[in-house]
Image 1: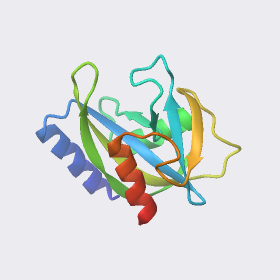
Image 2 (image 1 turned 90 degrees about the vertical axis):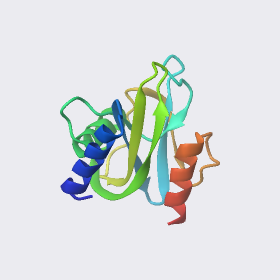
Image 3 (image 1 turned 180 degrees about the vertical axis):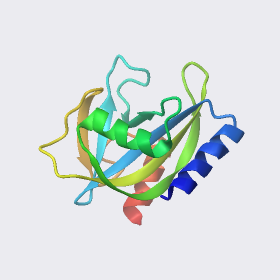
Image 4 (image 1 turned 120 degrees about the vertical axis):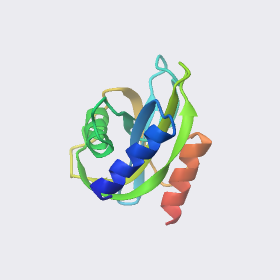
Length: 145
């Protein structure tokens, strides 16, 4: 995605009153997608999700995506291959969040190194692990494209 398009997303988020931007990567390795499971003690503990997280103040979406994927998995993004869309949700604290999701490929690595999650899985369908309806739609649309 071109930097101007990423900036347009941020401007739209601000106009829509989004209080916290979230980024996530659909990490694809040979047709398998990486999911990570939130630790039981976290908010939304036990849920499966794509690697990603909060955008820091002053950080752009692209920088945050690269940072979050490597922080959470030890995998370095080689290429952002497409924008898969966004959805809104309200956090446990009542904040208006918007998650932006991209498909990505990663550089070869020795494996996934989790820092914030308690498990990971490589999946080929949304039925392989329980996902929220929003994440299942993103994964299904991605896998069908």
